Length: 288
Image (cartoon, rainbow, N blue to C red):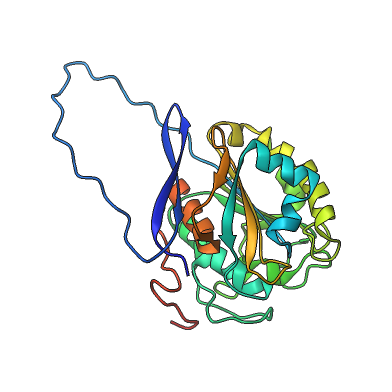
C-alpha cells in the first residue's frame, strides 16, 4: 500500500508540481511562512490563472511490458514520462476503479454491483465547484443498462450513492467538448474492445493513436493540462502496469513506487481539492 507524498515537478515557466503518493502515510509537508514582504506603492494586479485540466484514460488488462511493446504507446513513453514502478491495488477490475476514484476498494473483491455511500472524486469535485465529466464508449444514458461495449464494472461513478450522475456522458461528446467547454476533469473509458479487455492491447494502442492527438491538440491540454493513461490491472499477475504522464516539459522515467491511489492524489492536487482518505491511511467501509 502506497500512501506517502512526494512531488514530481515539471517546469512551465514556474515550477508546477504533479504530486504523487509513495511509501507510507504522512501528511503533506507545509513550507514555513516567509517574512512579510515590504508593501509596494503600486502593486501589479495578479492575473487570474486559467483552470487546470486533467484527462484520465483507463485501459484494461495489460502488463507493463506488453503495453510498452506497442508502437504508439512506446512513442508516447519516449516523448513524455512513464512511471516504471506503478502497480494496481487489487483484482479483478472493479476494486481498482474504485481505488482510482475514491481512495478505497471498499472491501470489494468482485465485479458485481455494490451501492456504496455517496463519495468519490466526482462528488468531491462537484462540491468544490470543479467541472468534470466521465466519457464512456457505448453509454446511452443509463449507467445500469447501456449496451455493449459499455461495462458497468468500469464505471465507478455509478457505485457512489447508488445512482447514475449526470456527469456521466457518451464518448461521442468528447470531441465537441475538447473544442469548446472542456471540463477540468475528463475521465475517459473506452468500451470493452477498445480498452483491450476483449480485443487485446494492440487494439487499445490503435484506439489511443486516434484519441490522444485530439486531447493533446486541444487548448485545455496545451495550456498546462495533464493526461494520465493507465491500465486497471496487469495481465501478467505481477501487479505492475504502466502509467503514462503526458504534460509539457515532463519527460523520462518516474522510478518511485506508485499505484492507483497515486493517480487519485495527482488528480486531486492538480485540481486543488483536498485528498480523500486512502485505504491503509484511513480505512473506509461500505455503509460508514
